[in-house]
Amino acid sequence: GAAEFPTLSFSERLCVGLGRFLRDPLSEVLRLCNRDNDILRLRLVDEQNLLDQVKHRSKIDQLLSLWISACGVDVNALLGSNELEHALQYVSGLDPEKA
Image 1 (cartoon, helix red, strand yellow):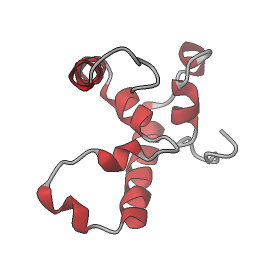
Image 2: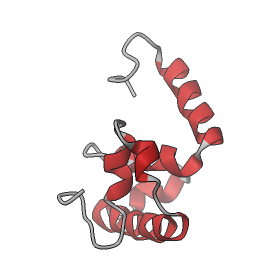
Image 3: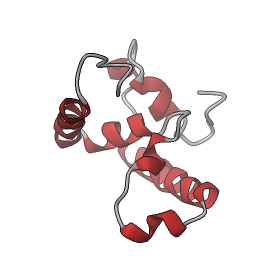
């Protein structure tokens, strides 16, 4: 995002995000699940603005928990990166506060 690449334009940051998504889709989606709820800014359909934001985020969290449970988290690979916090909050038994 803008904090990570302050000198890049929006289009350039978008290209970085798309490249990361191609490399590792789950990690890039997890990166959007931050305190600013960037995941909710991702517009996939026009009618998305009609959804209740709390319920929408809750459903996203449920789906990400299922994916993390299925794929697992390589903690050693994520040590020292911001991605660890984003991934651990979806591990069974943990939540954002514990992660």
